[in-house]
Image (cartoon, rainbow, N blue to C red):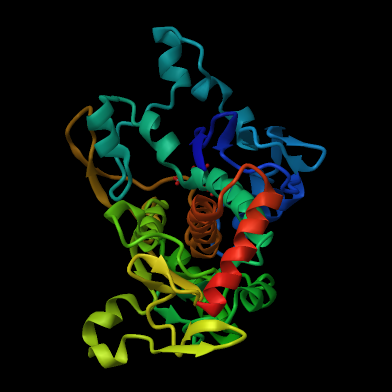
Length: 390
Ligand code: EPS
């Protein structure tokens, strides 16, 4: 499969086109809307989320509740667009209009794409950069990930994300035991966290940062279970699934780090305390006695749960001014902004879940792929039988 997303933060809509989804898979807009709503929630979000109620419209590739095998097009409207039609419209405008209409941006925010994008694409108006680099785009990523989760669900594979840390507050639950338990326990949590004590402290940390005009980041975990062994490949660098997941996670706005399993901790321990011992059981087949390597060896899944951690930096749009340079005057300035999220880590757990789900679903279809769901199921069941008795 492959996908493209398009759309600006204050443009009319976000669009995604997914190509390569097999036919006969039951898919409705509710399957996607559920995840869009999860992404919008979270303590620490700003006023924009009160404007938007993200809902998908499916305009191709699905007929009477089932995929047809044709490209699937997803649209999500930006309700805020009605306030931005003149500023963001595609029609040419006159020079006189430009001053009133354009809301030109000449002051790059430290930590954002503003300045690098302006230099690269020669935009004197950095709005041309920030509109696309905005994390609003993660709405489309979540919609695409929702389709991936629908595919995976057909094979009993479940993926869920939750929050491990916000600011310096850590959840006492270091690693969740199943995707189902994450879903069951975190849906009501305002910070998408399994530890209710830590939740209160995280909310306090967000309040403190907000009061200070600051922002805070955190760490999320995504767990995927019932993933079969052998997804990905050891034979070439760009076929290693753990590497693909790392790329997908680091591509999420503001993500600066990724770990598979115990990640960096593995560098500090002896080998005997890192590698997971192999065992065999007639009913279950081969399994590992522990899962420190997070479900991966040699770029391939082991059949143990896939465990991914992602680190999100604090959102760089700050009320507390940081110093920068005006590109028109070249003078230093320190400016505050009008509107931002103080913390989007709970939402980022949903985005990270979507990114991991997409990579696993894609690799799953690479291995068991066919044009239609019943054929993939046959192929998959045959493989499971074979690896159990191998
Ligand atoms: C964002 C800035 C804010 C966030 C936005 C990401 O939007 P605005 O500039 O309209 O206030 O709310 O996130 C979303 C819109 C979203 O859907 O997550 C940014 O600069 O990245």
